[in-house]
Each structure stands twice: as structure tokens, then as C-alpha cells.
Image (tube, rainbow, N blue to C red; front, side, top):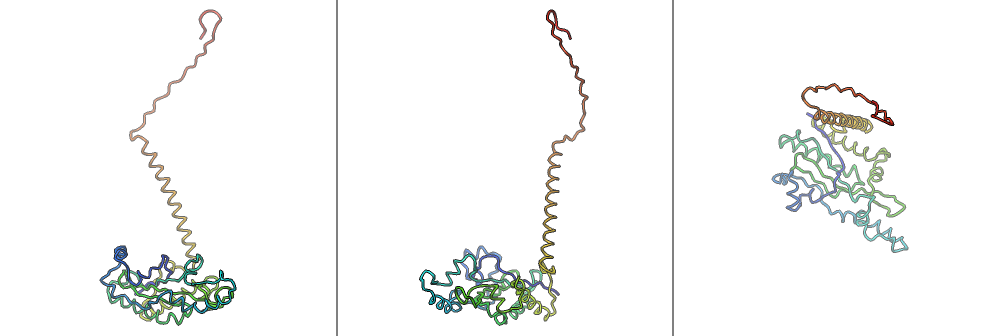
Length: 281
């Protein structure tokens, strides 16, 4: 038996009401993929208020920063709102963690196995990642496959400009694990977490199934493959274009054999005008 492992950043805007299933009736209608009859099987691990977490983590650092400012216009009233309005820094991070796919969970007992793996992996997540402050974590069992939505605030320290503690994903994970590749810290961190999930699979006699980008040895190999596929797609598009041009021309050609009539030979005559009498030909 084999299963895939996935840990990726959520690409859409975080919707905590969706994650915690506290949506409005209209939102529920838009999410027809959710089986509400199974929503009671969801596992809610952490549910904290994000603003309160900001106060806990940055309250003291904010007070110290403001106390040093001689000008009021340089003071920050609310660090949460300050980051919320920032175009450079994300307020929080959301990861979607999944073990297996639709075809790996034909029976409900398989859902339990997926839940066990996710729960074991999450149990020591904050010990492994002391700089990633979790404020929401839930396992969804009311969709096609069991998966976890994990929301946290990455907290880095040691800043000399601004607050002593600030929100920064890369810096937070590098500080907690200096061995990470400094050129691609997230990818390195992610791979280590995925390896832990893989170990949970192996403990149960399940091999990790490589799918998507995981089936390639490295990012460069994946990019080369994608470039080749894109080039093939362009060439196929050109072939289709020429094929359509040929078909368009073919429609204008009559089905019956053409009978070509010989063109009559033109006889040119020269008329020479005369002073008197008829002109000569």
C-alpha cells in the first residue's frame, strides 16, 4: 500500500470561518463539496483569537519600541493593524497538510488511519517549531479526503530596527533551525516536515507515493520538465493552427474534378494611321 504526502501553503485568502465550519448559510451553499452530515467528525485542535495572539507575542515588544520613540508619528498604536495594512508582510500563514488522496480512502476506517497520522505529526509540531505560533488547527473529515488546515504566526526576534520581535516566516524558521538552507529556507523546512509525515506512514507499513513535483529529484529537474512540456504544447498549438488553415482552404476547393479550358491565343493587331484614306492594318 502507498499514499501521497502533501504540505503546501494555502494560495487563497484564509477563511477561519470556513476552516471552523462557522459559515453563514450562503457560504454553506457555495461549498457544496462539504458533506455536512459528517462535519461532526471534524477534529478541532487549536482555536485561538488571532488578535489576542498578537497581543501575547508582540505586546511587550511594542511597548518597548514606542517608549524609545521621541516623535509620536513614529509610534505604532496597534501592531496587528500595522501588519494587516502592510503589503510586504503576511499577517499569518496557513498550511494544508494531507496524507493520501481520494482513491486511498474508499472506507471510513481509512479516514481514521489518515487522522492518526495527522494527529501524531501535529502533536510535536510546536516543539519542533517554537517560532511558529499556532492559533488554529483543524482536521476536516467532511470532504473527499482527510486533511488539516494549520494556521500560525511566524515570530522572529533580534531586530535592531523597529520592534525587537516581528513577523517573518523565513527568519523565524532559520532562527529555530540554523541548519536550513538559507537560499531556500521554506522548501528545506517543508521537506523536513514531509519526511516526518513519511515516517508516520512507514511505521504503519505504508510507502510514500510520489506525485506531482514530489516525483522529481529537485526543483530544477521539475522546471526542466515543465519547460519541455510547455514547448511541446506550443508546437502542438502551431500544428493545430496549420491544420485549421488547411481545412479552411479545402472547403473552398470544389469536390468535382476541374476541367481546364485552353486559353485562346490573343492576336495583336497594329493600326497605322494615314494622312489620307483608311488606316492600314
